[in-house]
Length: 260
Image 1: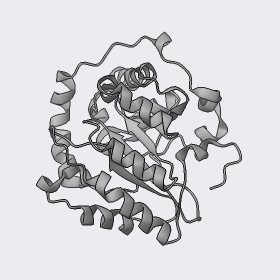
Image 2: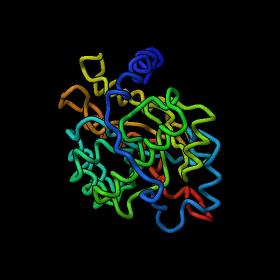
Image 3: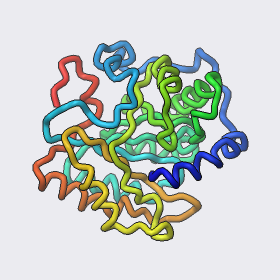
């Protein structure tokens, strides 16, 4: 998201969060992550940073998707990933998981990782510590209730990519590493916002570098069903591999003897 649009979103997000309903979650409802990942040295190495690029010199990239609106592009996205045998990580809000549990299960069944994107897509820089924890825990519970199972990762992505050191420490304290992105295709803006498939592809490729993390979106806001990122994905993936890059699974960052 560009800075001007980010500022406009931030101006509204406090009101939007107050109007949202975040389920209450007790400490006992928050489970640890599979295979002890939250205690791993590899995970702790990601703490204290917003992780906008993977630390490597190899020609590898990670493909990620956010989902907070609808699931209009999901089937096309999953088909494009499967056709090219490419892994991805999907950062879902808890609200999305509550409304689209079948989508959560579909992503997990396809073998992709699932990350936490808060419950209500709140602006964390305008929340207190207790509310921040509530957002993360509520999303974690919603994903589990929707059937995320072993696809869950100890990865968190801040709504609007609004991070600061304090909020990152709070998320780390809950056992999550913050994984942001090198670039967003901005496909979520749609044709109404001046975006096209060509523009989305260009933005992804302009950011191509060793360890780049690409951000796309599963659906479209305000009830729209046109998903530019779903249309752009095949061209992005083909161009990435055509330039000698390999798409890796973000979960590989958790391996004790990680190599990309």
